[in-house]
Image (cartoon, rainbow, N blue to C red; front, top):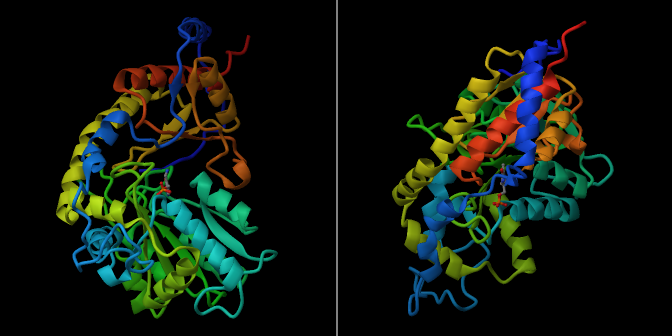
Length: 426
Ligand code: PMP
C-alpha cells in the first residue's frame, strides 16, 4: 500500500553511523559512476522482446482484414478494425469505441486538450477558455500531465492520493465548481505511487455531479496490462459505469503500447463514447488523412489478440519484476526501522515512490547526483514542479541493468540516510 506520511522529526543517527555512511559515500563517489534512473524507460532487453516488429508486416503483407491497402491513404482517422479489436479489452471498451493513433498517448491527450480549447467538446456550450478553466490533479502525479495543463493555461488544483485512488470527498466537492473542466487519472498502477483505484472510487468518479456539463475524465491507462505479480489488478470499465450513470461522454480513455512494444515507435490508443469519437474523428481528420496503418498492421501481426498481448506482458514482467525486487530489498536492508522514509510496494507499473523526511527530497537528489546517479528532480511529481513538503521521490527501476540498479539503490539509500538524519546533539 501507499500509506505515505512524511516523518517530520529528524531521526538521530549515532556519530559512528554517520561517519560510516560518509566514508561509504566518499568511496562511492570515487567510482565515478553514471546511472540513469530518471524516466520509466524500457531497457534494451525489454525492447528486444518486440524486435520481430522490425521485420513486420514484411514485404508483400500490406492488406488489411477488410481488403484495404495499408500502404495507401486508406480508412479513416480511427485506425484499422483489427487494431481497434486487439486493444479494446485493455481499455475496457468495445472495438467500436476505440481509436488507434500514432505513437504516444501523450500526443492524443495533447490533441484532445487542443481541440477542447479551440473548439469545445460535445455537451459544452463554448470552447474551453484559457483564463478560468481548471483541472483536478491527483498528487503525487505524472509531470507530463501537469506540463499539458501548463501548456494550455489550465489551472491545476491538487487533490491528495490515498493509497486507493484520489480522495473522493475532495474530488466531489471540487468538481461542483463549473470552472473545473476535467481531471487526470492513472487508475492502474498510478504514476508514481503504483496504486490502483478501488472499485468504489471508480464508481464515484463515474457518478459524481459536476458543475461543468462538459467535464472530462482524462483516464490514462498507461499501465493497463503492466502487472508485476500473479495478482493482476484491474479497474471497472469507466466507459460502462459512466454510461450507466448518464455521463457517457465523461471519460476519455488513453493507452499506448509504449511500455508493451517500442517506447519510441508504438501505437497511441483512445477509447470514448460515440459522440466523443465522432468529435475526435472530425478534428483528427482535418489534422491528418489518417494514422500510420503499417505500424498498426505490424502490431496486430506481433501481438495477435488480447491473449497474445498478455503472453507478451509475461515476458516483460520476467525482466521487470526482479528489478523491482532489487529496489525493495535495498530499501528494506538500508532504511527499514530508521524512520527516514516510507515507500510503495507496487504490484505493477513502472515506479516506486518514496516519501522521505519533509524538506529532504531535493537534498537526496543532489547527493545522488554527486554519486553519478540521476534521479528525476524532486518536485516533478507535483503541479508547477513544487512539492510543498519537499518529500516525494520517484524511482524508475526499468532502465539500468540489475547490477547497476543494485549499486544505484545503495547510493540512493546512503543519500537518504545522510540527508534525513542529523548529528546527535553534543
Ligand atoms: N501516461 C503515463 C501515466 C505515463 O507514465 C507515460 C510514460 N511514462 C505516458 C503516459 C506516456 O505514454 P506515451 O509514450 O504513450 O506518450
